[in-house]
Length: 212
Image 1: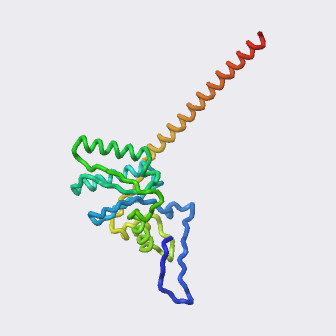
Image 2: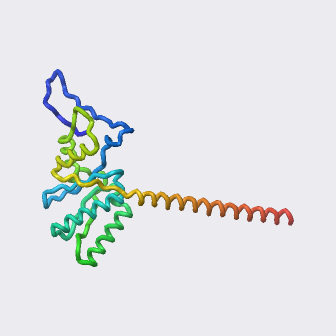
Image 3: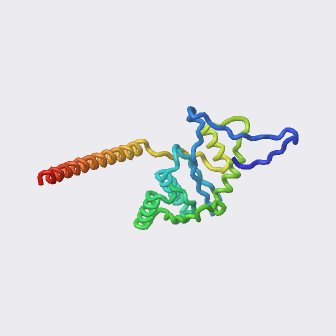
């Protein structure tokens, strides 16, 4: 929780306690957010996430930012971000390469030039102070805010529209889980078959040794 210094009576200090949502109440669970600061335009773009901020969410956000910049007549996006796993994953790097290849081939769109910050250097990330001041603006000492109410407050603090939340289609996640399960089953079958062949081969060699 961000450090805060309120005015209060010296004999009755104000204590701000961090409240936790109940595990059985999904409406109280906060949604992760991904953010882009555009200093040239003086704007902050924000999208909340239903679920975890994984690589598939990052590529959706980058595509959305590229579309908004293209509408503004921009040609390139210099992207400076930290070393989060969903920023430097193989899927994200491959998506950026494919996106830039398509932009170069078609002559339309916004190229993305990604630059990673040094590890463990939050003071170089322009978003960090934004989040600190944002937390101070949206804090609610009286009650626990719902997920969408909290998102509305965050968007109000940053002066942006509360856009639809990003999410991974359930069919895609189910297919990924199914492919993983099928691959695991196939590996087990191959391993079992290999073990059976080795067992037969060892028994055959033992029989030959006994006969000789």
